[in-house]
Length: 260
Image (cartoon, rainbow, N blue to C red):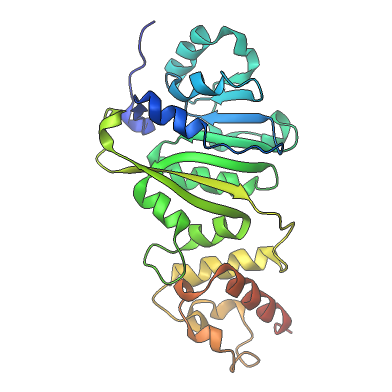
């Protein structure tokens, strides 16, 4: 079969190490929570080979690259409609999957944040994610309050998922090799049905706080608060990077209570 060319504009770096591919697939922990697994950007199918060896999964592949799609269609003819030639960022999850599912992939680094926000958008359906990211992005996802990496993505992911940094991957196991180190993380949906606050307001507070992260929260979220009623609130004197998810939830509730 003719090999697929890695395309720079799609951020493609094909994994070539089968041991790492196997390790990534084995990092899924379904524990009876899901059966359907979606691989994003399978390329030439190095992860897919291991996924399709597991009868407990109903594996789907999605790739925006038509060349990859044609290659995979010949390689896995039995997949049928479970092989999708489309943009993951435009995918209709509810129309395609039933109940809980998992997402896995060697994700294109140029859209990694967009992929994670798409997953957050469908957090009530995506129970688990195992993915390869640029190391810097993986560290940001798993970082804790007070660190320079901690930001909007850290808070939102950790609000809804347990985030685990699994292992680092060197550039030499990709074709072509990226100019950065890579890392694999696992996201597991937490058991909390909701955050215990107005989630729309929570998102507004977190985004406003980090969009002006050098300012104290009192200044960064000034458009969202009743300044007169929250003069004594000490949390507002901190910067966003100091607050945990629980702190942001508490602050959201305090802002909501003092709005009128």
